[in-house]
Length: 494
Image 1: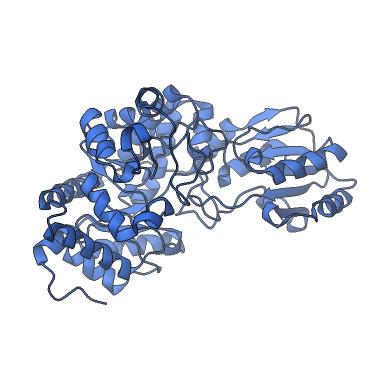
Image 2: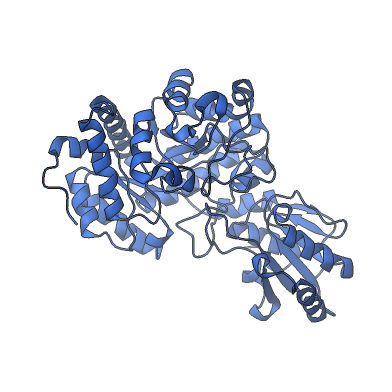
């Protein structure tokens, strides 16, 4: 596939300067290397690009060899959302765990360590932290990705996270403006509505973004969500009132506005990706993420849509020039930050995970424990990341039950587990049981027969068992699992 023969080189270069498309391999494909050499801003990496740290470092080195200081972006939040550790789980607890501890100094240190890891792997832009105020306990897409439900708490940790990441020379990107925490719909699937007037938005949702801006955040990501009083029928991601009026004007943000994935159905189902890209840039977005599974063909379609919008007069060329200039400023910042002092070390991740665990009851020694993990459907933002306590028990002592596969066979499954656990300790591991009735139902039925069973909640601890030992980790990072395993005596300290 090649560029159209009649492409305007200058206009094409401006279009390239606002794009960070993905590619679908472990190696840099020729088209990506060529586009970077031609002026493409950079790329967004996902788990499918990562086999190992060594391979990732080689990959980013080749990207950097193709162009000076490209934007190499990744969605690395720690906790439940990890790309660099998608095979094992993150060594850093997520925002809910850090918010539970409520030590901004620790949050800054954890994000500095995460940033050092990313910088060492050649990443220049982290699409984190999430600074949504999670006021809807049943929110299907934010949950443990948020620092909490209290605005002031989220604001102070937003600033700490931004400071930590950027101290390592990695640009931070606060998301999902103007706040995805009160929604009960996942924008990966459809367009959510934030049911709040501007006064409530200003009081509840905007302060963390203001705190991130005050801390010098280099980028902000708007959410694909509708705020009727602000955006009308448009999502914030395509709304001039939200981006140019509120974010740029009232909040004074001068950095780079980065789109959320344009393949997300909240916008793609309505506009298609190329049209959504044009509308996003017209509204004030500077840098476009196309989504994990898009390829060279979609990159070229979006590029051509931007060119056509300027040629037709639909979008002023100055808007594209302004966006390109802001992205150049980001690239200059990351180039200058390359010499930052960096002290990494995932040890702080485990230390933080240990501090986050909350225990209700008195742990007792376990006897040949059978660990039953109740597995909910995967969160679209996180993907199928390993989690749980399976790494700390023999393989024949672990049972995993996918809630989506249970229907009429639930009673038989439960009776089988109870029979297998006879004479043994029983540990139930759930994840956001309050959002998954099948998970809460399984746990309740088992506890009725085995009130001595231990329950470990690795999501938000909203649903709680009526009695017995209960542990909450506030996230499902690998270190959160280890911290719970240490409390139960399944793993020794390391």
